[in-house]
Image (cartoon, rainbow, N blue to C red):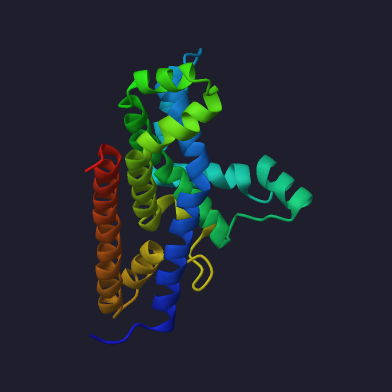
Length: 231
């Protein structure tokens, strides 16, 4: 097999960086939202649940366009970030990470929420009767018991972010070496004569990385479950 070109290696490296930061950046919000949906009782809960899962049913291009409207240099949030902190997301790799985080967020929240809902509330009540406040009950009882779901959610988010195309290319374009991820590089190679070999090579890389993430999610979650069960 021919060696990867510098452009292909850049796309692979950027995709991994984007997926990692998308996963890490959305994790705290994923845990909080999953906890609120699993345990909270508040008005508008159904609406919040639908809003969280909206990226799964919206065309990714629509999500990318909304990001451009909100976080672009002329958008209300993007203009505020640039003027106050010097942060620019549109047409930058950080914007690709934001797009990936939003597209992978529903999968992360769902995995963590299902894990929280399986926690035996009697264990939390027992910790409370021993004097632990709500924060320590969550940190020492609930969080460790939901660890399999957190691990699964993290890796599902990583895999989704890695393969994101529509929202990313709409929000940050397809600039080689700057915003060109694996998915956008594959698309670009399919549009030029003689690019099939490179597109196929990157497709294989994308499949391998995504399968590795999914398998790692299952194996790590299984290992954590066994450790929590004391096996």
